[in-house]
Length: 537
Image (cartoon, rainbow, N blue to C red; front, side, top):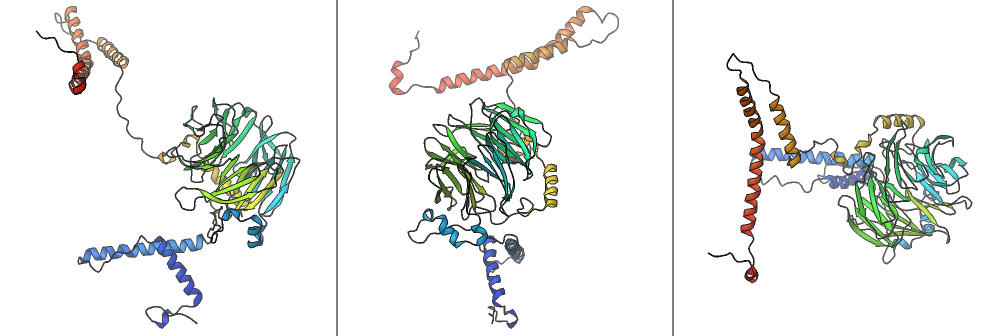
């Protein structure tokens, strides 16, 4: 069984499997081609025709190479829920999804009920393999999500407000009642960071190895976890805040305040880079898109706003309240409030988010944190009675890069990666709103006009230098004090001349401008009768 190619050559007969693979490859090649090929038959210039023919072949070869690379290195394709007819995707329940997926995916649907230690907050490693869970009443746990096994759990017997992983799953930081603490995965306390005080939120900048915290007095601190050095300590001056998020694109930390403003900070500046009014009331939640260009904020006035961080303008306003927000790797936005979670998606590519999915947990449970699990179509929900996991099709990146994040990382690979990341650690000075400026040549600034005081100071310096000029000793009769005084006077006048000429030129320029403005200004005909008339002789 086989099919013959168009040229009819018996040698080109392909088996059905290879024929299907060839058709699939052709479809992928079309995606990478630069439009339709040029019609070279109409050209009469043989040299130009040959050059264009070579270039068209090069384009075809590069498109085929890209298609083969996608086939072998990006084997998985992402997908979303698709409704038929009048059916809506947000009406599809988790039970329906669970019956249709495979066994390994169905394992990601579960509820952990721990009513004595909630509400819970969650954090995932960059590979999505491990999860840290922290209960408000002192319960800390590290879970291996691949094997669904508990690695370690401890009870610190005091309030825990937040938890965050450091550069890998071996270390995590917990914001406790008085100070933040750093633990290893075995639950051993390594450090007590007393300088941070009573911290409400934590963020870790993995490219810079900086632990950022905001305490209940509104103090923002940055600490280098490799050397233990305190990089920055700033008073925000905007009061206590419970909303803090780091932009994954540039490392800038954003804080949401009770006055409705969002301030953006870097560790080398004592003043905010940006301070923008986002809502008329307090900010309740905030999240950044993985590409760093979009920001979602939620306010007490029951509105969720999508912002373009590059232009600092609102792209979309969605009605609804959210106590916690999070973006997935593929750009889905999760908003949780009360006992209900809503998922919004941008399916048109025009930055216009619409309703995609919804999920209600048990009535009475209060959601505290939602977090998408990287490289999986899973959303973790931390609430007052424990934590839950639901399936959100299309939320995770289907193909992972082992150089960036490897869910199947071995101990040896983890050690090697840790060393490489330490060698590639970025200094705090590289944190800025536009990191693409790093490495570029600084543009020449326009020469600023010196002030009057600066000009007077330069004149005095020139006069003093002229007065201190040493005079040559000449022969008898030519070295009289009167002649020396005249010569020194001439030197001082020569030193003053450029400054006086510049001053006169500026005064003349100003006078000319005033005359020109006076000539240009003329009253309209209706008001000319009110103009002051010149006295006539």
